[in-house]
Length: 328
Image (cartoon, rainbow, N blue to C red; front, side):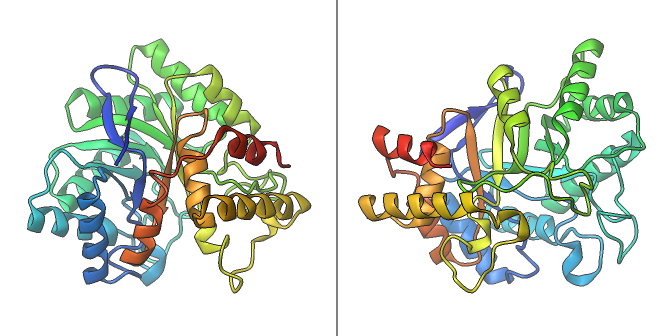
C-alpha cells in the first residue's frame, strides 16, 4: 500500500493510505459478516483510511443513522484496532427525528450539534478522538462564526484532530476558512466531494442544490485547490456505483451528455492497453492526479475490494494519462 500526507500543520498532519474505504452501508445494507471481512482485508492490505458518517444509513430503516459507526466500533473492539487506522466521520446531515431526511430535517452545524454529534460518534466507535471530522452539508441558518468556533473547540480539547468539509459551495468553504484565519482558529483542511473520471453536468438542480450541483468537483473547486495547496480532496463515489461496468445501471440525468460517451470510450481503451479493469484505471487516474486526490471507494464484497486494491500499484504512462486528460 502507498500512502500520502493529509493535513497542513504539524499538529494535524497524518499519513494515510492512497485509497480510502467507504463504510457507508456497513451494518445495514452490507451485512455484519461481509462488512467485517472487507474491513479486515483492507487493513491486511495496508489500508489505513476509513470513512463514515453519523447519519449512515438513516434512509435504510427510516431512523437517524449510526449503523455504520456502530459496526466500526464493534470491529475496532473485536480486532484491537488502534490509532494507526484513521477514521473520518461527518456531522450536519443526521435527521433530527426518525423518518426525517437530510434535505428537510438535517441537524445542521450549530456548536451544540457539532459537540453532541462528536460525542455520539466517539461513543459508537469506541474512540477518545476523531481523526477527521467533516461538516457534511450546508447549514444556511447557523452563522459561519458559530460553526467555525464549534469545530475549533473540539480541536482545542483534543477530541478532534483535523477538520474537513463536504458538499458546500466553494465560496462557503473559503468564507469558513477565512473566518477561521481571522479568528486564529483551525479551519477546514480536507474536502470531500464527488469526483470521477466521467464529468457530470453542473446546471441541473437537485434537492440539496436548486441552483445546480454543488456536491461534485467542478472548475471552481479545482482552481481553488490549485491556489490553496494545503487542501486534499477525498473523492467519493469515484466508480459511480458500478456504472462504468454494469449495463443494468443507468447513468443519472447529469451524466447523460456527449462528453460521457467520449470519456467512457477513452477509459475503456486505456484499460485494454494496461490489462487492468476500467474501475482500476479510474482509481489509478485519481491517485496519480496532479491535484492531491484520495479516492473514497465503497465495497459490498471482498472481491470488489480486491479489484479496487489492484489500482494502487497500477502506473499509467504519461501518454495514457495525457490521453485521458485530453478527452472531453
